[in-house]
Structure formats: C-alpha cells, structure tokens
Image (cartoon, rainbow over all chains, first blue to last red; front, side, top):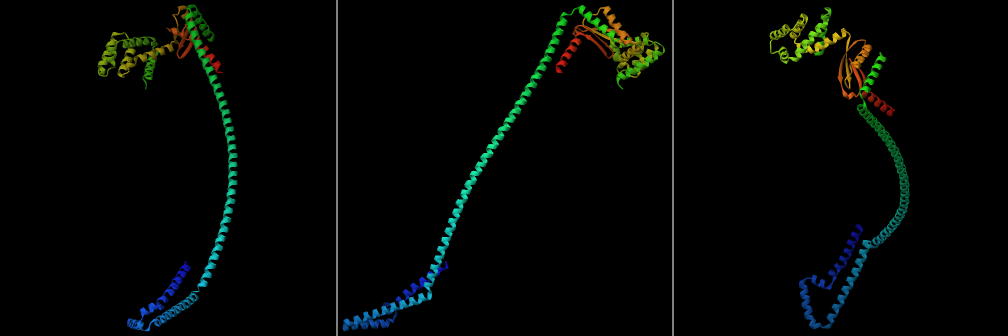
Length: 220
Length: 183
C-alpha cells in the first residue's frame, strides 16, 4: 500500500517537473512574464521596424524560438534524468519486480498447498465413503441381529401366551365342570326332596322316626 | 347389669328361699299365674310400671291384686320387692329363669320336637322314652309341625339338636357328593 502511494507521489512530481519548465521557459511565457512597459516598447519597436527591416527580422525570431525550444528540451531531459536518478525509480521497479516474483512464488506455493489440501480432502472423502459403507454394513448387521432377537422373543412370548391360554382354558374347563357338578348335585337333591315329599306317606314317616329312635337308643 | 342377668339373680334368690321350704314348685306356679296376669292385663302393666304414679299408689294397686289372689306370703313379698326396685317389668324373664331352675332341680328337660305331620301318641311316647334314656332326665315334649322337613323328626334339647329329618339327610348326601367332587 505504501509502495503504491510512493509511486503515485513520484509520478505526480515527474508530471509537475515536465509541465513547469514549459511555463517557465516558453517564449510566450517569457514575453508575458517580462515587464509590460518593455513589452510595449519592444512591440512598438517591432511594429516600427517591421515595416522597415522586412523579412530578415522575421527569420531571426524563428531561430531564437528554436533555440529556446532546444534549451527547454535539454533542460527537461536533464531534469528528468536527475529526478529519475534521485527517485531511484529503477530500484523501485526492480524491487517491485522482486516483490511480484515473491508474490507469484507465494501464490504458487499457496496453489500447491491448496492442491495438496484438495487431494487430502478427496482422500478423506474416500475414507469417509469407506467408513460410511462400513457403518451402513454394521447397522445392517445389527439390524438383522435385532430383527432375529425380536422375532425369537416374540416367538417365545407367543409360546408362553399359548401355554398360559391353554392353562387358563384347562382351569376354566375344570371350574365349569366343578360348577356343573355342583349344580347337578343341587338339582338332584332338590328333585330328590320333591320326589320324597310327594311320594312319602305316613308309614314311611313312621319308619323314619322308628329308625331315628333306634339310632338314639343305640347311642344311649 | 343386664336385665337377663338381674332376672336370673332374682329367680335364683327366690328359688333358694323356696327350696328351703320345699315349696319351689308351688312358688313356680304362683309366679306363672302372676306373669300370665301381668302379660294379659295391659292396664295393670302400664300402671305398675309407670313412674308418673307414685310408688305408694302402685304398691296399693299391687296389694289389691295380691289380696284377690291366694299367693303365698313369700311371693307377695317378692312381688312387692320387685315393684320397689322397679323390676316388676322383668317378671316374665324371672319366671322363665325360675321355671328353668325348677326343671333342673326336678331333673326335667324340655324337648322341642319338630315333625312334618302330626305324631301318633305311641310314636311320641317312643321318642320321649328314647331321649329320657339318652339324657337320664324326664323329658317334657313340645311338639311343633313343620312340613319343610318333609319327613322324620328333629329333637332339640337345650343347645343340642338331634336331626333325623329327610331334609337333613338329603342335605348331608348333597354335601357329601359336593365334597367328593372337590377332591
């Protein structure tokens, strides 16, 4: 950044040095910068002698102008040379060249680094891809194992459920048979009571009481 | 103290007095007569137990009843004591206890005999005789009919029940069948 500014300052100085002598040493400027009274007198003299001296006067003016121009140019070259010498522009340019060369080298190195990183990234990507496949395979294996486990557990539960159901059915059947037998006994007893009460006569009753008396007598 | 226990205590006291004179049977009969009168005459019952009337008036009323009867002096005094102690209302319970004491002293047992149809006298005598042999007590039978027992007889003496009914036998058979199915 500072180099760029330095270059700009130098360039501006060069342009200034080129333009300034043109103003200082040009014939018009020289004429305008001299005393106005002298100008007027010279102009008057020129005008007076112009009519008198004729064409020889005009050609000497052109020569002087050429001389002035030549001096101007020479002075410009000298100034430029001195200035360039002073500003060490060549050094600067060579330094800048070196800098650019370094920059190019850095960029090349950066490029190589980036390429290397790219290769590394590709390599890691490959590794990731392999790992991904491994993980997927592992998950598939685990999933299959889990599936087998779930199926076996479900089968075991189903077996237990069936066994429990069979036991429940057996118990329910036994309970139902028991209740049925109880009901049969109840009904049989009820029927027996009804039949006996219907069929029993006085003689049967007397016989029963006699049997009862006999039992009491035996117990005595 | 509960009314039942008090009644028992009064009955025992009277019975011990009657036993000394060997007149407990007579006292028992007199008590039965008074209890029967007390039970059947609601106005008398309300008058002698109502505290609205003075004790003197109630005593006079009781004395009037006693004068009309030929109760022994002991029973008269006992009834007056009950009135004074406001226990005349327990006369029926006392009489029942007294009757039980007489039965115990006379070696009498009451038997509740349940049959499905009327018993012939011969059969009843046989039943009474067999239980007299079993308990070694004189049996006083109280026959009651209950057709639900279907046939046979049930004899209840005190807290002991002798069940010879058809219903009981069928029930026993039924329970026996049920038990055999359980096993």
